[in-house]
Image (cartoon, rainbow, N blue to C red; front, side):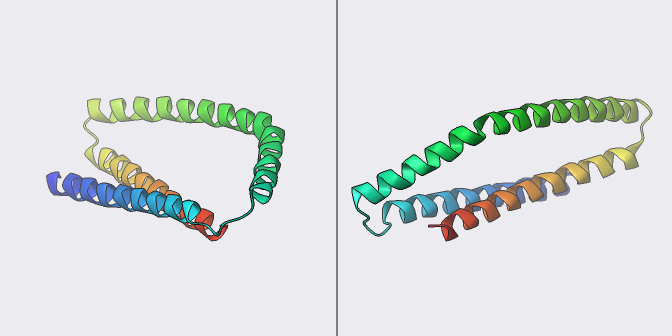
Length: 122
């Protein structure tokens, strides 16, 4: 079990380092973007702010809904895990741990893909 945890930790660390490198790369790319006139940059910035303001309430609503769903699911999972611990259902605990590991790996991968998409939009 320790090697599984060590491998997961190493993979998570490696993925997080990859995300960090992508963010640095994206930042450098943005900073070294072809020199646009100040007017073009300000126009794009103003458009982005308008879109952001228009969508802010919708984003906030979705964020609140997602947070509530997450908290409900987290409570449900904690309850199940405690029940499984009490009744020593090792297989179910291992399965839950594997699902959590896969979820973390997927979330990290999604972050990397999102950064790559942002880079392509430059």
